[in-house]
Image (tube, rainbow, N blue to C red):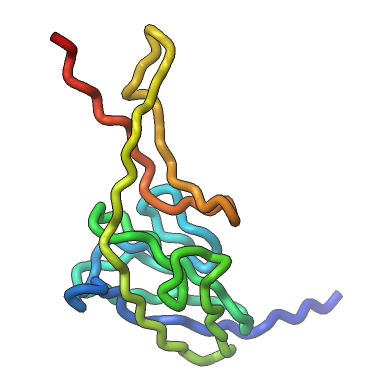
Length: 152
């Protein structure tokens, strides 16, 4: 049996702070969906201070690329500086070529509320995960509720 594989291309660029233009560290680009933690996929690496990234070995198709930030200061984004995969701009990859794509990440926002657990349940053991309601993709870094001060 003969198997023919499509050639691969690369997407490279710089992830910048949308307000200052400075490079953003701790962003782990992905051609699939955002990872739950700051680990790069098999064909990319997380950014350092300069914000440079590279995603290698992508087939010659249109890709919606995720740019999850794990620095606690920047919101996650998708190609085209979109907030969700459903609104992302696909990036056309061509076999044997490098496609440039720079990304600008906005500052994070804040979600607040109250977590209520049954008596005797470990509040610090609760995980809070932001999820895109349309796609089910993770939309931010997982966190735990902040313990409240004891009542007096």
